[in-house]
Amino acid sequence: MKIDNQITDLGYARIRGIKDPPTEPLVEGSLSAIEQVYQSQPEDLFRTHALFVGGKRITYPSVPQVLWALRNVGSVQVCLDGEEVEMEAVYTDREQCDTLGAPYMEGGKLVVSARALLESKVCGYDAEHTAFLSRLGDATITLTRTDDDVLGPGWWHVSLGAY
Image (cartoon, rainbow, N blue to C red; front, side, top):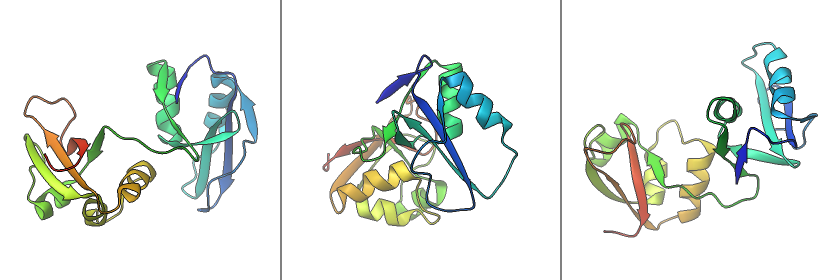
């Protein structure tokens, strides 16, 4: 779902402690109202927070990423709780690239099962990558990147199957 900075049914919730994310917004309103609440919260390493659209929790991207994109770009593609995650690109860190025999900086191609890619990430993937790769299970995926791609180091275009 794509949202823009004119959204009026944005919500925000924050709870103390490292727990499951909030299930409903504590504050609802415009982007400026949500930013005001978000910025007024003291820095706290032990917090769990979430944004909501129409009462549904945004699972990806993160709260700071969504707020930054809305403020600086004007819109952002988000995934809501319960939606199937689709990704056009996935990330591999240097350690994964070394383990899987793939280049980190240069163009290249990697054919691997989604499960193997998921399990190769030592510290684990973020929620979006985890949901996407978990749903694919043992399916073979092909990761490609050319030297001219602007994806950045470690980022790959992903497609289903071996090509």
